Structures are given as C-alpha cells and as structure tokens.
Length: 279
Length: 293
Image (tube, rainbow over all chains, first blue to last red; front, top):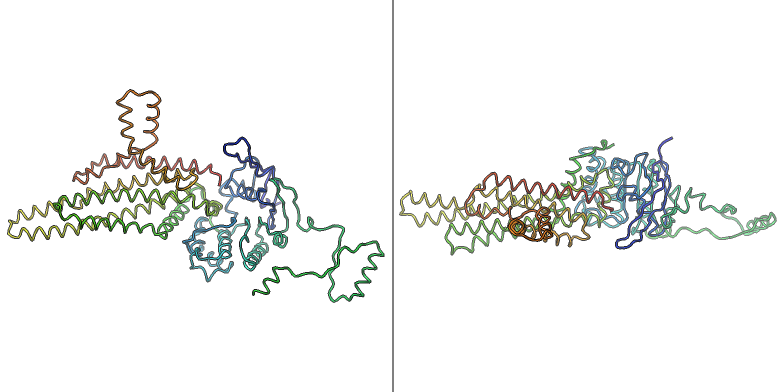
C-alpha cells in the first residue's frame, strides 16, 4: 500500500492574539488524506483555515498540534519539499528576472545545474506556453503569464505533489481555462494536486475529491460525484425529441408514481460562450 | 530527476546570493557611485588654494569618510528591504517551499549584500586611487615647471614628498576596516528585519544602533571611572556588551596623517567586525527559524 500523497492527522493551529488573552483557532483537529494521483479540492470561505493548512503542510508555519506527512515524510522537515511544488495566491516573483532566469533560479534551489537545468527550463516554458516571453522580464508579464510562470517554477524539480492556492485568482477566462487544462494535464501524468479555490465551478470540473473547511473544521469530505449527487433524482437529456414523445414520457412517469421536477433546455456555460465570442 | 537533498548546500546559498546581487544591480543601486565620483572630482578641483600636501590630506580625509558613510548607508538600505519585500510579495513562500533550509536563505541574502558592498567599495577605492594619481601627476608636473632651475636633489625630494602624500598601500587596511564595519551593519540590519514590522522601523533601529555604537566608549569610561548606582552600571554593562564599539573602527584619521596601521590593531578590529557579524547572523537565524510566515 503506497503512502498517501498527503496525510494530515489531528492538525490544530492556534494563533495568540497580541495584547489579548484570546486565541484564534485557525485549524481545529483536522484529519484528511489525499491519495497519489488525485486532484483534491480544499474549499471554504475566507478565514476557514485553507491557507494555514497549506502553510503548515509546506513548513512555513509550525502546527500547534498534530502531524502532517507528504508521501510518508514528516512535512516539517525540509527534505519533504523535494516532492512538492507550490504556487501561492497572487504571487509576485522577482520582477527584474526574465521568465527563463526565474526558472533557472528555482531550478538551482532544487539542485539542478548545467544542461539538465537548461533542458528542464525549455520543457517547462513550452508546457506553460511562454517560450516567446522567455527573455522578457517578469515586470512586463500579465497576470495570467505570471500564474503560468508560477506554475512552471512549481514544477521545476518534477514534484509528485502540487499545492495550488487560488491558481486562477485575477486571471481572465481564457487564462483561467489554460490553467485548468494544465491541471488536467498534470492529473493524466499522475501528479497529485491539492487545489484551493473559490471558483466552485472550476473545482467541480477538475477535482476527484473535495473537503470543505468551515471555521477551521472539516465539515464535509469525500468524492465529489457522491457529495453533490441527488440520490432520488435522475436526469435524462434527449436530442431531437418531439413534444409528443416528451408528453408520453411524462404520462408514463406519472403513471409509475414518479414526479417530474423540472423540464428545461440545457445551457452552454457562460465561460464557453465567452470564449467562443472572444476567440 | 534532481539530485538528492543535501543538508547544507553551498550551491543553493550561491544561487540565492547571486540572485540578491543581480537584484541590487538591476535596481541600479550602483548609481550612488556616480555621486561618490562627483564628490571626489569636486573635492580635487576646489582645493587649489591649499598647499599640495594639505590638498592630498583633505582629499583622503573626505574620500575615506565618504566611502565609510556610503558603504554603511548602502549596507543598511539594501538589507532592510530584502526580507520584508520577499514576505510581502510572497516570493519567500515559493523559495522556502523548495528544499531550502531557512539558514541557507538568510546566508544567501547576506552574502549577496556582502558581495555588493565589496564591489561598491572596490569601485570607490579604484576611483579614489585614480583621482589621487591624476592629482599627483598634475602636482608633480606643476612642481617640475616651477623647479626648472633647482638642483636635481631638491626636485627628487619634492617628487618624493608628493608621492608619499598621495595613494599609499597603507590606505588599504583602512579601506578594509570600512568594509568590516559595513558588513557588521548588514548582519545587524538583517537581524532587525527578522522581527521588525516594517523596513522603516528596521532602518530607524539600525541608525539608532549606529549612534549608540559611537557612544559605547563614553559609556565604558563612565562605567570604569565613576561610582554610579548598580542600575546604571548594569544598564551600561549591557549596552557595552550588546553594541559594538564603533569608535574602534575609526582608524582612518591616523592613516590619513600618514601613519601605517599596526597589523595587530588591524586584525583585532577586523576580528571584532567578524565576531559581531557572526553573532548577529546567528541571532537572525534564531529569530527567523521561529518566524511564522
């Protein structure tokens, strides 16, 4: 049985409030597990403890209680970060570096040098579609380009786990779709993804499992399809069905004791419509 | 696949140091060298009314003083903004989320600033030596013009005197001490920035330490020669232990006057600079290793 990509057990984080006796519990006895190859969505309103959980997992903040492991290694140890790539929310990388220099810098931090580093940089620039902007300084990059170079730096050491905090925040729909496609691509490569996002539609599209945090507690967790399915309802979508045929179905259903809840035409998503109009 | 993680990697420290140096270069911090060059040129042109030996002495005095102030200022300003900016921009998260220990991050940042200070001081020293050399050549040419009829021994003595008054190797240890003082302040500023709430606070505290550091010998004299209360003695003892005696780094007056710095004094002062640098860096690591980001 392989180690889980992420294992969090009884994690609690309490922040003291300066000059007050009160204390703020940001994460409260959280236990969850993410299996290798899954795309896991960590959801919750602002202040629910998502970012704190991510920071503890990455060793940026110590836990008050509990344990966190990445592929079986205690995540408070620096070595565990060999397996992790991280993209924070709204990151600003060094503006004076070009895209290529940025990837070289992060590559060197992961021990890459010489030709392997140059090859990996070329691969990543190709993967995120920034080959033409490789020589431009990041100060001139758009928000979407910054997110993509951020994604590339997260992947530089070929990690088995990607931690993405609001990867599409502030990005236009086309850029957002590119990032979503990249995440789906990672999934096919077997990379585990822990995704924090407020864009529930996007989470629904790409995540296998989700956990919902509220006031530091995990209030729901499980496979997405099972969580959101309405067990006693069934949806059928017909093409070219005549009104007479539909009337017969309705009558037959009523005769069998079933109740028609809704009859409507399916809609394209606003995102799809927007992209059709703008591209 | 990248190589296995190493507990301590000079390569990673070098990458962070190189990047810090590149940041400072691309932020055009070296532009201040132009101000230094202009001050030097101005100083050499507007002292024609003084005797040549005095002109050289004033030039050396002003230049070494300017080098000391510029290097100290650069050390404080460049270091004060490093850590808060990386935290604010979340760049620090992306670095520490890689297999980079916090100690390596701090050492890399500090080394980057120390490289930059070495380059700046080196350029200033070269500019200083070049200006003195040009001044020396014009002074000798003028003297030779005036002493056309004088005996060769007198001419040789004048030339020898002029050369002795300009750039001599005895100035180099003085410049090195300026570097050690600036390096000490870079590490102190780094320490303050690990717990300061803003870079302005960091700069204010660094300037305060600069002033206190120059008052340490007065505190020590008071401590040794007066019978104050135990509270004032305890306070002054703490003060003299916590802050370096910056007056010990003011060795340039003697050097400008033409006296060579005794090797013992040079190594003692340089050793003190390195000692405080090591202490402040260790304290900075202790603070930063516990910092919640």
